[in-house]
Image 1: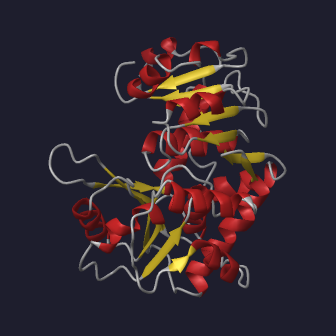
Image 2 (image 1 turned 180 degrees about the vertical axis):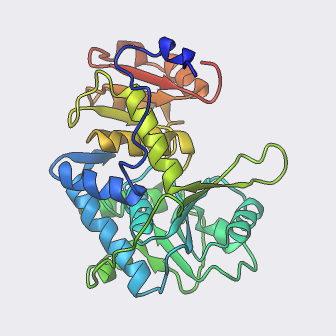
Length: 337
C-alpha cells in the first residue's frame, strides 16, 4: 500500500518510530536523569531541581512506598496537586516503584474525588494540603490506606521554604482547616525513603502506567487505561514531530498547563525530558500578573497552551513587551487554536 500521507510530512520527519526503543516510562526517566544529571529539569518560583536531584528524590519516594508502605507492582497511587516540584518527584517515584499513577484535578469536589478514588481502587494519595479538606470529606474509600500531604514550599531550601509555607497558610489563608489522622508529611516520607534502596521492578509495554481520567462531560469521569507502551510510543511520536530545530540540553519550556493533564504530562513533562529540557512550572497561571513576570525572567524557547491560556496572555499587561527572540515553538491543543 502506498502511504500517501507521507507526502504531507515535513522534511526530515521519519515515517515510523522504533516502538521498542523504551520498555517503559521508568526507563525514559532513568536514562534522561543519567544523561542530563547536571542540568536543571524543573524550576518553580525561582527554585531549580536538576535531573540528578529528581533521580535521587524520586528514588527515595518510590523506596518509601515499597519498603514502608508495602506497595506492590500494579497498585494505584493518586496525585492531587498543581505544578510544583513535588509533582515530578511523586510521579516518577510512583512509576519507578512499578505502580500506576492516578492523576487527580486539585479542583475536584469531594464527590468527584470520591468517585475517582473508588473507581481507580487507589491505595494511596499524594495531596497538596490546600486541598486536604476535600479529601477529609470523602467517605468510605476502603482501599485508601496511605495519605501523603505536602505544602507548596516543601522542596524549597530554607528560609524560603518556611517563608512560603507561612505566607500561604497564615497570611493568604489558602489552606482550609483539615484533619487526616495517620497522614504522612511528604518531607518525612522522603527522609524515611532515604534509608532504603529502591527495588527494581520489571516493567513492559503491557503494564499500566496511568489511569488518566476524562473530564466527565458525558456523565461521570472515566479512567482511560494508558500502558507504558502507549506512553512511550506517544512520546517518541511527539518527539519525532517536535524535535526538529530543538537542541538537547538547551531548551526552556513554559509549563503553565497542569502536569496532571495528559497534554502537559506528555508534551512538557516527558517529551522535553528526552531533550533534557528545563520546565518552568507555573503553579497558578490564573495570576496573569505573576505569570507574565515569570515569563520575563527566562529566555524561553517553547510554550504550550490552550485557547483560554493564550487569550489571557494576549490581554495581560506587559505580555506584548516580553522578549520572544528565543521562541522556537508554540504548541496549542484542546480545540482549534
